Image 1 (cartoon, rainbow, N blue to C red):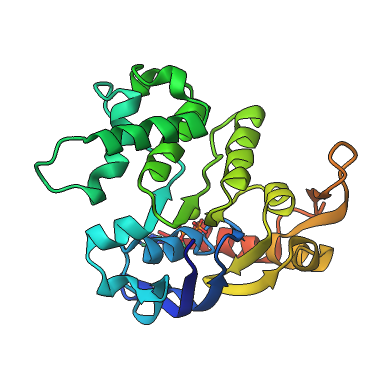
Image 2 (image 1 turned 60 degrees about the vertical axis):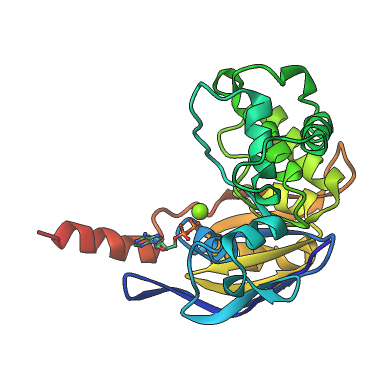
Length: 274
Ligand code: ADP
Ligand code: MG
């Protein structure tokens, strides 16, 4: 299992600093949740670990190596990615999609060998999708597609899994299936999550972003206090024990005074725009 380190990462897009000075350590085998309001920079930060956005300041290290010192292929052997929405043509079967995960392990003209086929089969079994191997990927439900994409990530045999809101667009049961699988895999995992309760109930630690910076990191119940949730998300929150699971849970409610001052200013700016 692989460790992941962001060291003083700053990221610029179109000459604007979108992410500032993020230092974050994800330990081997740990499941870290990344939460924050829309636009707080979660996806941008993750893209620096995907090796898509090169940090303007600091660096991202996977297993101690700077991702920009690795080739794209070497990086793909070390970390697998699952995002919230992946569109693939109807012509791909489920097993072909999972076999794409083998690409970084093969030469350009290599066909799938026996080991590749075994790995694909095992990955599909791990996400309980073996039954769909020959189905067209495009015909699966959203939850099934996410499980297949998770299988593709497993077939990649990377030590680190990075996910960007992998449960978006899924119904409640499919959301839990994906999260249960992530927990069960026990891999080093950094995942942006939309739902604070998923972060509380599934993650070992959470990192909270606001306005491009990291504002808190720690055990969910230590970090997602009513004060912090109110300050960062503008909602009321209470942490208690889930009546079904017996584990910590967070309940949120409207702060009850729309709109916030910051938004009022935005609206005023919008109204005065030509
Ligand atoms: P999150 O994933 O937390 O919702 P993002 O990382 O997507 O946030 O976005 C952070 C900020 O960066 C937002 O203000 C967004 O508008 C801006 N941003 C992201 N991508 C671009 C881009 N390609 N061009 C300009 N601004 C961008
Ligand atoms: Mg995002």
